[in-house]
Structure formats: C-alpha cells, structure tokens
Image (cartoon, rainbow, N blue to C red; front, side, top):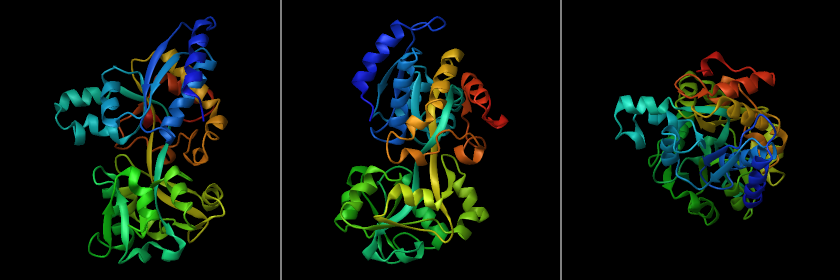
Length: 351
C-alpha cells in the first residue's frame, strides 16, 4: 500500500527539481473510499507524478462521488476517480443532479474527460458452501443481500436476479438491504443466506466473510448473459459486461473458494469508470500523467490482490464501457499517450 504522507513529501521535492519542460504544477484530486480500486489507482498517480516531476497532486479520498463530480465539472478540482454513471447523470440533469437546469447540466457534463479507464467492481452471487448455492436458481426462498437501502446497487441486484431466473424480490426470495459497512457481518451472522452485490477479486468484503467459512461464488449463466435483453441491461449507462477466464477468478480468490461456471469463462456485471479530468487541464500534463500510468501498469496491478482483475490498461469499448450512451471522452493528451504506446482508442471515445 502506498504511503500518502511519504508521497506528498516526495511530490514536493520532485516538483522543485523538475527537469526542463516541466514547470511546477499543483493539481487536486478526489476519490471515494480508501482501499477501493478507484482510490488505489488515484493514489498510484500521486506517486508516479511525483517520481517523474510531473505534478504535485493533493489527493483526498473518502469523498462523496456526486460532490466531487460537480467540483470536477466546475473546475474546482482537476482530477477525480469515479464511475461513468456520475458524469452521465450530471449531463442529463438526472438523479442527484436533477435540480440543475438541463442546458447547464449538459455543459457541465461536457467538461469531464478521462485519462484512463478501469473497472471499479463486479456484481456476483456468493454464499457459504453449506447454503448449497451452486446456481442462481438456488436462491429461491432464501434471504438475499441486494445492497444498501439507497442507491442503484440494490436495483441492479434485483434486476439481475429477475433477468437470470425470473424470480422477483419479496415474492420468490426475501430481499435484504444493509449499509456497505454492515454487509460482511450480515453474511457472517446469517442475516442473509446469499449475496448479489458488487465485489472485487478478492475485495475486503468477501475476504472478511470468507474468514468465517468456505464460500462459493457463481458466474452469471451463459445463455442468459448472452441474451439480447440482458446484454442491453448490461450495457446500460454506468454498466458493462464483465467476461474473463474462470481460471483468473479462481486464482485470485484462492483455494478456499469454489468458483462455479458452466464453461471456462466467468461472467458478471461490471461498474466501469476511471481517472477523470477536467478538460481544461493542460494537454502536456494530461499526456505525461497518462504516460506514467501506462508505463506503471505492472505496479498498479500488484497494489492489492484484486487490482489485477480490474481491467487496467485496456481501451476497447467492450472492456471499458466507453461510447454508446456514455458521454465521457478521452482528454486529447491522454489519447496521444495511449496511441503512442501502441493502443487503439475508438473514434467514438475521442472528443
């Protein structure tokens, strides 16, 4: 884990001794909860920027996504680690931004661009082995954790269950919601029999629950996953299909876990996003920051056990959730860095 205090000190020195071509640059960045894929990726950029004398980045994690999305759009901060659903809602004056004038919201939304994409988390079904859950249909009649009482996670969870099994919440199974911080305990103490919530492989929540007993994780069923109506749902704003080799997930989760799929692939619903930037950030700075990220992908993927499965370093539409209804485009400086490194940036993701 990176040490932010040490990094800040290094950043100050690096900015002072920056080589010719780099003036001293101070940037501000926000991220949500510490220890998440977003916060760790944003933290890594602080260190890389300091090492290379690109900028001194002042990072605040544990921040509220809706607030820092607005701050980023207004230019009050320079960078933010966030899911794509937030700029989408902002640009549409929807959800937490519904009080905005639609024209104003559209203009604000267009101020947000991206340096590099990655996955924040993936919806999956898991439970203790003794619950006998080997398929999504096995949760019939059970108490199922769907997410927190507020937000979109519980809605996504219930929708996925209905799409894959036809079962409706509180008719075919009991829907349970608790806060993010209470989820692991709800699984451990038997408040719920199974969970369909966002995970990382392995994230803190599943690791905590697994310490109390052997667990099983179940991939989304292939036939349902590939159905046209399900693909439409998986590609809705703020979501993307997640498809990786089953062996990768099994290796990440370890021998204590049983990971089930009908073939050699693991399927889920991903929450895509990335490190976002205000479009007015200098192009050369954006280029250098993105270049630093690309050239340190191996380091990023070893920051935590789950980081290797968060799709860092991929730029295809399928992997990133870019294009379509997603309004976010790459910053011109980021495009230059990616293409210089040999990656293809889809035309639909360019401003």
